[in-house]
Length: 263
Image (tube, rainbow, N blue to C red; front, side, top):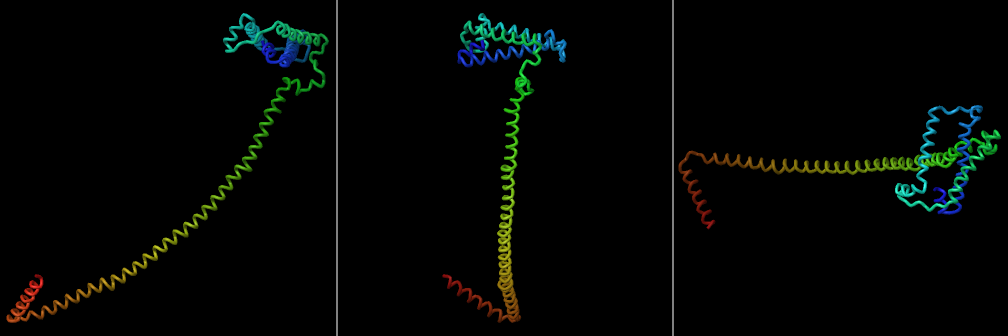
């Protein structure tokens, strides 16, 4: 089914699928023979235990069961589950798929009979970085881990040299500006306060002079006038009746003059 989908896309992709299938068959066959083959007990390897064998058995049964989904009769079920339409299949695709699997198995058996299965790869290809899971850890380290660490280091340096430097510079500028602002505020506010205080002192002095000179002078003059009037009024109290009549007559004349003037 995978080969059919690849062949529908391009012939080159179909060829790559066949090569990958052959390598997978050799890899899997070599693993099975090294672990369970007739000579596995003579090699310096540990035979799988019951739990490991049971786990492989479960995987094998699941693989065979799920393989039934790729039978032509189950095509409609797969399309319904996947929500898509399977590409049309050709007989050569089935023959080619089985052929590469059989070819991989024959290669592994031939190597095992010659005793070359443990060292099936040439010396140049038996390096640890190649045989270790088909170099996937190496690729992961070179393509993902190391670039990620390099990017993290670069970002850390940029953070220290650019962002933190900007923050520190902003802090220093804020300190300088706050100092200048404080001095300006002190100068302006203190100057205003001193001006207000000086003005208040001047106003207070003027008010004191006005109170001492004008208000107090008027009050004292009024008091002196009242005292003099009282003193003079006491002089009229002579006890002579004819003088009282004269004062009363003068008062009546004054009152009459005021009334006449008012009309």
